[in-house]
Length: 320
Image (tube, rainbow, N blue to C red; front, side):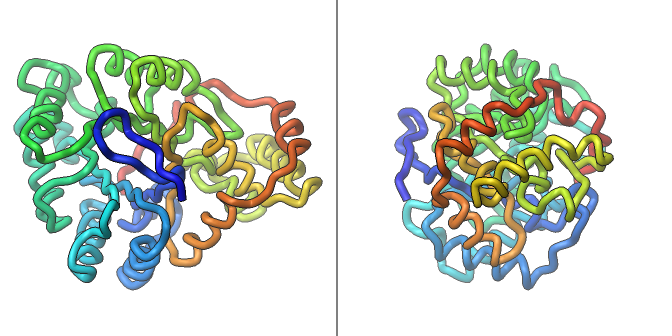
């Protein structure tokens, strides 16, 4: 695979990356559990493949995602050469505290779980769910700590990973992030992230677009799941999904390929992060990334309506 640079950091990533939240087993979010063996086999397949980006977080699966990745790294004797591991600073999940001390402790917990002494990319994660935003943005807060960790050589690049676009815009305007991650907000169903992408591109901040399948429905199909952006919906809510599926059927293209390449062909996006939780998903993702798609299919998709509202505005957030 080609590799795309992350600004002037010296890092370069493949246009497709993998998200490891599901590998930590988060049934409240995804509706299914992932056992140790399945996660181990999936990680082996990831590290043996052409994709060089894996994204995780301290709080995915209450630490299980990082622990399972750490076990896979130790099994291999280290990360593959050129591999880019991305993880995140997280708030205290019981109290919501997210000051500078908590941020550094989160990072120390990540390094212990991963068995590493540094990471390639480190993000501030989900500040909208913290108890006090001032703890994050104030002097000596979590954001100061994030950039200090980069200055100490413990991370090559630092970023912002979260949901609420309006807060991302405000933070991106004030802080020189190398990269950002948004999820569910630039898909065939939703374009809420347009203004964010424009600002990031203007500032030279790389964009990782996560959840191109809108939480899975564009990969699994409307007959298999009624969850969009991790929330159950009714048949009316699934109508836009079925319209996309109809385009795919007319042109002989899997809806998952349409959804994935909608993101990978966007020039503002450096990498598209696809959640994987089983070994067979690796080949399927690579097949979808390279599937031929006729121009007529893109024209048909461009004619479909899409939302610009927050797709998670009514979501009851459960981190498990």
